[in-house]
Amino acid sequence: MPELPEVETIRKVLERKLAGRRILRAEVRKPRTSGSRLTRGLSGLQIDLAGCLRGRKLKSVRRRAKYLLLELDHGTLLVHLGMTGQLFAAPAGRRPCCDLPMLPDQHTHLVVDFEGRQRLYFRDIRKFGSLRWLRDRAEEQQAFAALGPEPLEGEFTSRVLAAGLAGKQAAIKALLLNQKLVAGLGNIYADEALFRAGIAPQARAGRLRPRQVTRLHAAIREVLAEAIRFRGTTMSDYFDPESRRGGFQARLRVYGRGGEPCVKCGQPVVRSVVAQRGTHWCSRCQAGDGQKQQKKRAGGFSGK
DNA sequence: CTCGGCCTGCTC
DNA sequence: GAGCAGGCCGAG
Image (tube, rainbow, N blue to C red; front, side, top):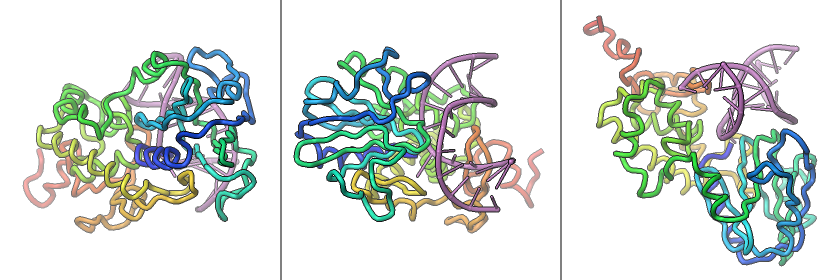
């Protein structure tokens, strides 16, 4: 699902197409009463989302980690896309693109009509996404209280990363996915950053050498920035609001390439499970300092 | 921290 | 039918 680069790509498109426009009407299509975060406010109370949106003007579209914030002249709609969430902006009654269904379909949960015949759809097949209504900045801060630094901002320094890793026993990949150490990485970019840094995903976080931490910090920023330039990664169902696919999938070095030769050394890319997630890595280029150490030394001195 | 659960659709 | 999928949350 969408990770930081995809969400940032969506943000840019929405900002360009919808910022400054007023909402004429909104429709929540499948309000579910219990267990769903879809139409809940932060307090957990049911709210009339359509009523909150109607008549408001969209001032700007911001992003925090993988969250989108549609900031209105009164209140903010917080959107998280989960695994399969999509936002489409298209004129009413027009199909977003030929290989997508006519909207709204059975998976469309919210339809927002803007002035100028623009219509915004929130669609989410697996329903892991969420919509929340934030009344003010205080609620916004509360929503993000547990999130770590933005990886592309100055607040995310090599020192901050090092401090977050110090003493941790967990696999480095688990921490990268956690959103607390740094926010915005998901399974794809965690694997890609670790490959670029030459660190094994299962390496104990607290055991990384200072230079490995420095490389990881740089790799995280580079891979995210590059992925944004290519408008994100489309493995299967990611589209931006103009129905465009991402372009970064052609530049992935390990993710989704299990069994194929490593782009650096030619050895087959390994596909295993780390932190309960499918993980792609090169056991030669990412020797790290975990259990795989011996592999690197095969043929030379044996480890023990 | 790790695990299971949440959902639906797709591929074996 | 089983297993898998880009994320998160709550429980242990």
